[in-house]
Image (cartoon, rainbow, N blue to C red; front, side, top):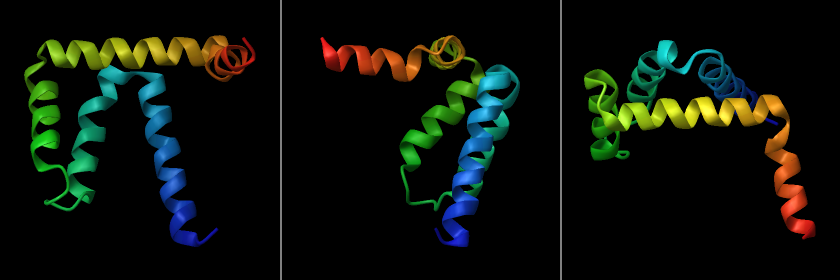
Amino acid sequence: MAITEAAERLALYKIIDYLDEDPAEHIEKIMGLVNKFTPDDVFPTQRAAFSHAIEAKTNWYELMMTSATDASTETHRGRGSRSRENTRRE
C-alpha cells in the first residue's frame, strides 16, 4: 500500500471514529473538511445541500443524526457484519 493510500485510509477511519463518538458534535467539522479537500467540481450541489442541512439543523440533519446513531449502535452490538453473514446463509 502506498503512503498516500495509507494516509487516506487513516483519515477515513478517523472520520468514522469521530462520527461514532458523537455525530452531533463532529458533523460540522467533518463536512467542513470534506468541502475543503474535495475539488469544487465534485458533487457541488450535493455538498451544498448537506452543508445547508447541517448548518440549518433541518429535518435532513435529524435524519443524518438518527442514521449515524443507529449505525453506531448496531456496530457496538456487533450486528453489522454478523447480520450480513446470517442473511447470506438463509
